[in-house]
Length: 227
Image (tube, rainbow, N blue to C red):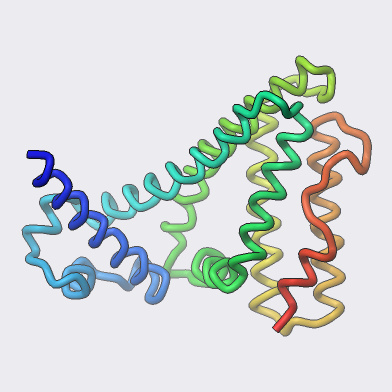
C-alpha cells in the first residue's frame, strides 16, 4: 500500500512540475491540460485522477510552494535566541540572499508574474497565498516585538498584511527596472532608493526609528546587475 502511495505521489509531482514549467514558459492561460499531459506522457484519466481541473492543479502548485515558504519562515519564527527585530531582519536577509544567489531564476519569475498578462490569475492566487503564509509569520514576530517593547503596533495582523502587500509593489519595481527597461546606473540608483523607501515604510509601520531594519543593501543590488 505504501509503495502504491509513493508511486502516486511521484506521478502527481511529475504532473505538477511539468505544469509549473509550462506556466512559466507559455503562461497559465495558454497552457492547456492536453499540453501538460503530453509533456509527461500520461493518459487524460491520469490527470483527472489527481486534479479536478487546471484551476485545481494551479491551486495545488501554489499550496506546495507555500508549504516550503511556511517551513522556512517557521524556522526563523521559532528561533528562541533571536528577538523580534533580529527575526524580521533575518527573514528579509534570507529571502534577499536567496534571490541574489538564484538571480536568473528570480528574474525569470519576475517575468512570469509581473510582465506576462497570461499569468494574471496565477500571480493573483500566488499573492493571496503569500499574504496568508508570510502574513501569519510576520504577525507572530510583531506580537513578540510588542511584548519585547521593540515594536509599537496596534493591529499586528493587519500591519503584517500591509507589509506583505507593499512588498508586492517592490517586486513590481524590480521587474520593471531589472527586466522591462534597459539596465543602467540610473535604474540601479532608482532601485536602491525604492528599496530604501520600502525599508523606511516598514520601520514606520512597526514603530521603529530609521536605520533599525536591514532589508536590502546596495552591494546585493549591485549583484543583480553583474553579468
